[in-house]
Image (cartoon, rainbow, N blue to C red; front, top):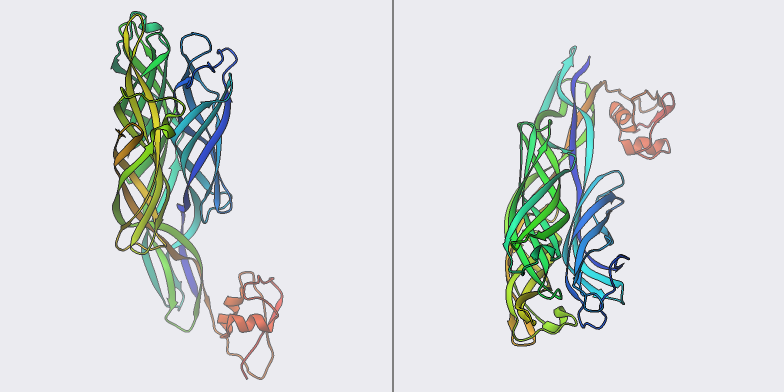
Length: 532
């Protein structure tokens, strides 16, 4: 008599937790030794500053993920005396963040993304700078499981059993090696005078993933790159700023594991960006992008979830949990932005004249919290509208257009109804799009207006107890007037012995001064209590 089990090995990945945080950054930096000192006679010697954030490590702990990275940043500044403005790539200031990620634990695989919302540079003497800004950091943890489960069970001998099975779908995440790519683009023409090729330029860029497809042997990551270039103009003491959005970049990653039934997702970040102007005034940029794709393999399996005896034997099973998620709802949230700030709060020490006009404005959006409730989702975050204002500069030789870049930070939050979701569900922001604009309101205020749209998807955790092994137990009738002992076997537990003798596990534990969860030692004697 008995049960014969056909087993199979199963590997899958559980999304064990996620979290988000806003991180305020304030770091000191120094001009490299070979560069001249800042012109302290100028009210605003820093003409342009910009950067992007790069995550270098993410480590899971108990309920947290520690994230570390650096900010790739550049500035254009006026040197002491009457020298031409200098373009400097700053020593990469580091940042650290501790993101609360419920259910995370050491040993989990952690990943994080950081978005630099804005960066401000202020002089702190002739060679010193203070960088300040805000980052939105998101982190999540994944946990790999390797289990053996029963995919079929049959009775051996005279035993008869009923087997219950269930189809379950599990996901397995396969991280791939990061892949580099370079975007080279001509952005257009600048009227920069006869010595255009000698004018120094600085560039900064950001990238976002808009699509990720897995096919036979490869993963194709589709990105959009935004580039901002500042170039020294005229007498060498002003800059003009050129910006381009949504430059396409496709990155192909060789992945022999990729095949049918697989999907993929990816993160991407900018390692560095540079710009130059040729003798004809054409602006050229080169952006180095890194993407980190992950393959997601979906497997649907039929497993045994319960076995019952149709005869006198008791079927005792060992079970193991299979955990996963399924999409239960999708929704979108549109947040209207309307805010105004004093001009002096964003322009720093530099005065803004009445001649200046807003050439363009662009938004950076970071989510700092997203949470599912009963039938609703709440979200909050921070954005900055980067305003490029232009004016006219005249010297003895010519008239030039110059520009100033200013960041207007705005915090936002909202709630949207999404039927069928609960507070136990996990929410992810699938995509973000925005239309934002800024304008002058009189002489003293700047106003931001527009909308930000978030596409959300809700995942519900799934836990299925699956049979790993099964045994038949012949029940024993106790003599209520006799003392009964049993010798613990190698696979015996309190629960298994209790079922065999028809008593409760709590009563068996109490009779032997044990806890119901205590492990038993093979060969020891256990007293079996009987109701008299």
